[in-house]
Length: 498
Image (tube, rainbow, N blue to C red):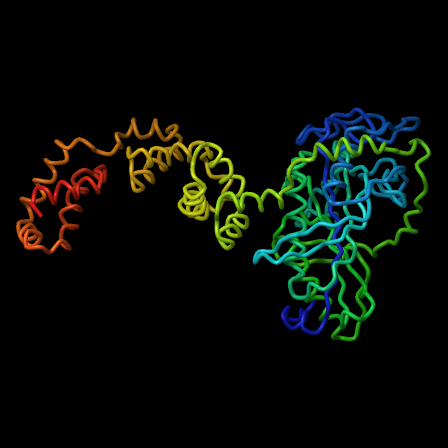
């Protein structure tokens, strides 16, 4: 294993430069160039056609919905949309590409020259410039059987599933991301996360990284100073989580710094990221564009989206995540730090849905960022995986607002909802948790508490109201916390004559 330079030391002495290529699988019904269905988890090789299998004589036809989705992505990234673009053949041999070439776009992408602003955890905004966004098709999936790593090295044999072969992709390529210094890992993570959120807002993909709907190839290079020419880059392939993107960048910076410190040269190569160790390992020497022998795809005509169609698509774009966050920040009245915490916790949509269901923003934030966040952390799950809906949280809060339960009882109701006992109203009724508001029942408990603590009664009658809390506490205990504490205090003071 390569001996690493301490990260803080590496970024003091070298200037890191990033380049990120994000692939997103489009959520179309059929594949990019044929009518094979696109479904996750199907039987291996059950979603194929002669086109996606690369059989002789099979001719491709472009998926119009995929072109529309690509234009939507390009517009959301402030790109220029080409008036005329074409597909090309990217030639190489991989066993999961049955044609021995990938149909992609090379010198004429559908979208180019864009930008996107990303926000870091502390509110810092970084602009990332987009080189291009182009259409292509996905490869199949290799499964390497035997061995300990799941990779081809050491495997006994390999299986190929072509269900994924031909699924529409858009690849988004940044221009060099410079000047971010020691925040390079954070910038990389925030950029990929921002794109994921945009894909979901546009409804062009499920964008589930755990399913491989979004994958990032992360290029990293180092140079002595920002004034020097770009260093030799490595490309860590198919990183599929935000945390892994951040870790891969950090590791590569420390690894490359060690190589340069030793007077050696960084090799331009692809690398694999290992989730278990947070390290990368060599893949293959990285090819340049000329090595792929690109040439125009002869079986497909150019794509020429009319300006009218592009503007129609632009008019249907939804509010994008950054604009929505700014609007909700104002509407909800949260402090800057509170809003950042909400966004960083992944609670924005949950709070938004809870507010839409009738809760106030403050109440929705209280539940999702407090009790529910605590329970999610205990269970080691994401906040969105907690088994309760925004509508149920809004209903729970409405019971508190109506005085039928208090915050303490509400947490017990929450237990029942999470246990699958039904909505909050049903749990309150079934467990008999509603606050005791009948003065007759409360006075019984008050009189019992007063009789049990005559010394405190005397102090209160003498003008010292401090100890009255002990009487109230006894009443709350007697009613199992189901009394209205404010009403209990009123009755206690009335009974004592204070």
